[in-house]
Image 1 (cartoon, rainbow, N blue to C red):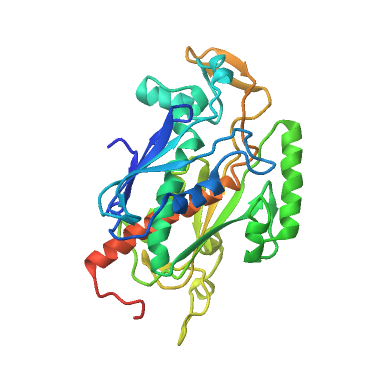
Image 2 (image 1 turned 45 degrees about the vertical axis):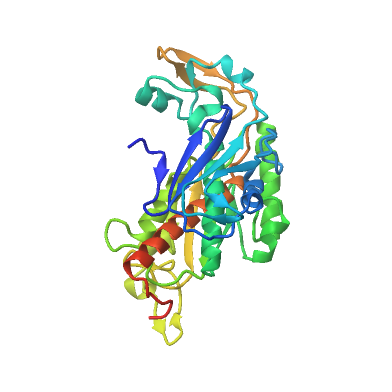
Length: 357
């Protein structure tokens, strides 16, 4: 197992490197007769592509997707879908000087330890550029979930230590940080500018909300829904932690505070985050992903080369100040892939399953 595939019935395999000729994804297990065009996928890729916002890398990639297989006359055929995205704005020159040096916070050291060889250009396979395939696959997963009235929304709740005070979901697409609090978004923009002026980067927190998920998705033991959602989110390079519902706050509650009462209309609060016993309970699914700062910074750092000799490193090139908000669409994609996979598994187990108990 090489670790490049994810999912059980709805299975994706991403391929490609940051500075290679192209990247892409193969999706196996997509149901047939789903309406799908390149425009449906492109819409999601445009939300993730570089060159957007004050904190984004100036790298200009059009990220134009080509559907190579699995779609005929505008509908999925049930056979593997192969998607192709070409790299067009590649500049590897800034990496030549440091090709024998391990960059702090990057996967250079661990890739060398595992494989004995690595693509040093832009981080190769370990680059966030790999996520373009995930977002393309997630676009297809969203098409399937949309038919089932499920909706996924990711938004910024903290950046550089600045948190939101309110949630107005209408604000998310009105600002460049996809933040539901206009005032907080303005403060976050200033924080980005400050970090950029210092040559530094910042991290934050993305919240993911799933509406319309029916009860019954997920497996009771090892493939718990929250376990697979956490794995999907944690497989994104910049994510260092995941919370479900009250998350770590639950550790500071009593049982009487943490338990969600059930009334005639369903759950009366949602500290469980929409999942109990590893299975969705019909309430909104609420997740949060902690996103680390981009490790490529414009400051001198202490590191070592392949011979483990000390090196003072100053990284050049084109880099984001924060993975947020581009990572938001990646979080949505991974949640969508997990939900579609478990939806298909539930349909296989109980074809007559209803949204009502």
